[in-house]
Image (cartoon, rainbow, N blue to C red):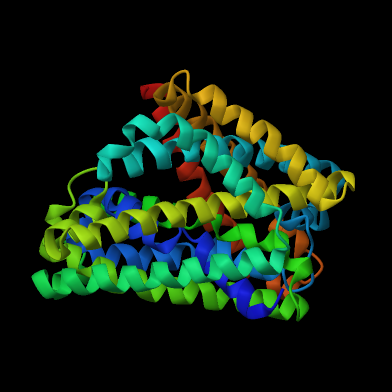
Length: 383
């Protein structure tokens, strides 16, 4: 895979970027929206700690094992296998319930006419995603890169509309909302970027090796960061007040750009979430290949069968299916990431000059993932 395509997969993995603006970021910011600029900038800086850890490991490691290969290099095979098992549980649960989210929560409100066809879509989408994942990685990465580029264009359009109707205010970058809502907003927004680790499972297939992987992570993250800051800053002026529903960016597109732009935003957001599912399936296939040595394509087939079967089961009660799977998936995700962060100083123990920075990054990254774990467990307790 060319390094430029790797950058495209990194961009697609961050949310994707259109889904962040249209679906998730306004809700994650919560009471910190009046300081939207400060919130998104701090969130991007805080997430620099996990990113620094992945970049540190990637100086020497480019493997289909992805995060698990990092843990193995730092703490040995046993700890790595435990981390891999938890990570697999997280993302295997994520695959089917995210399809349910696309069909029932994202597309149905915008296209009421599909209600009669939701069951068919619930089955066809995982089949289509699985078939797409069987393509050679370079081809699937090329398509995902195009999807990512379209997302960035739509993010720019939505951001432009927000600026046109609300402008910008210096108050967006001042801490006038209180420490607690700002902290919650920053933490919740930063956690939205955690899937940027998915392309690390393709690192062994990137031309240019570890150097290209590290550049790709930095460039992809930087590109998305610039677009998110541009599009989210106007929320401080109240320009995003039309986005009070479950699909904030789609509502904003409808209010300021009319039905055609709302349709484009909804379809683009659905494509961005579907692209993320593809990346997760591809990463799962490579991790299982790394663990047990099976060829990648037969491994993907073995994963696709229960993926499709799970979405068939979801038809019994889609809402309960989503609720029952989403919280355990998030808990497992944050636990698996905490393992990666905690062992990073062990990886640096033979380089004393780099150990203080490693400890600082591990502390901040673990605290961020710990906050995610706390919120996921709290949600389970309150459900």
